[in-house]
Image (cartoon, rainbow, N blue to C red; front, side):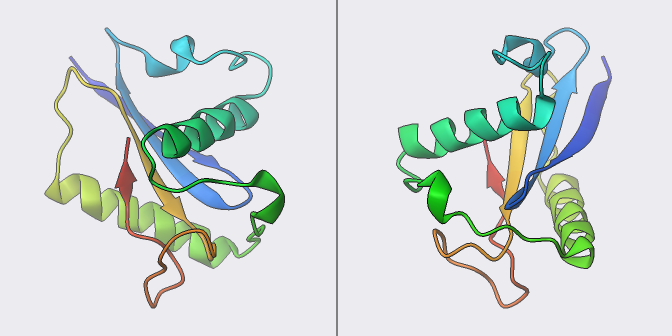
Length: 116
């Protein structure tokens, strides 16, 4: 069983998605066939609110257009996965917020890696 991994860039975060061939996570998200980024964003915001990670007011999200920071966020997710490999049968989302006032930021301008 092989894991597939891809990144979705949101205006305010980078989301890494790890899924396997037997349990494709993205097919279970409503609206994914229309706009993948919008559907993932909706899922991530709902997840953070449901688990009381943070309440996200979409009007207060700060867009980040720094491609260097996005690449560093992808590398941060890669390092996290290397140190905490996913269980093969359990699909996951990995989230790194980019310069957002809604969560504690590390000195590099990113949040820690949130695993969903």
